[in-house]
Length: 284
Image 1 (cartoon, rainbow, N blue to C red):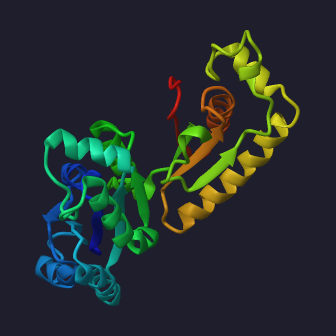
Image 2 (image 1 turned 180 degrees about the vertical axis):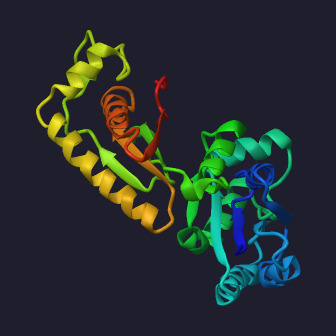
């Protein structure tokens, strides 16, 4: 049986330890704080006795960033499959987390906490772009993060259906940074401007019926359902078994919620395991 390697990295405070614990619970052999240059050595030592290895690595030192690329190339030359999981969170979320434990950011030096976060984000920008999976943990609790990691790396993934998360969001609160695809529903009339619908959400029947009956809604759903089915089939052929589709409207309360729910209903069971999450529902 061939050896699989997952490299867990990303922003300080974004949940690397939680992701590592989840992988360990799933049967992966976890090594913490291993320099990336030792990836090949680690797999040599495993010598086939361990087939699932997760390595948590800290890339704040510039030499280690170069080491990661060379380490991954080394594994590839040995015929070993390696994936990189990059964890990140918004500046605001990271500030709250560091404040809650009352410790400085490891890169803030003589500056502020925000200075340290931004230095690290800039330093890791290219590594984020090269990662196989980017997870934004800003609004995830521990259990939600564990579920996302399990969906991507569960040992039964080879025979499992595609894991698709449909996330409604409001543009005024910002784009979900870990989205693979983004859909804009602002071309539909906004129920916010209908007084009797404004207090309700896209999960309520009256709002749902209003949104889905607007001109263009049915055509959009029919066509985008086909696009998603085409993409997910391609993802599966390429070994990608998790994707996040973000569906946006102005506030994330009416149109995006109704469209996400309906698209999820249409796609569920078509070789796709669908979860629907409403990021901004309930926000003012």
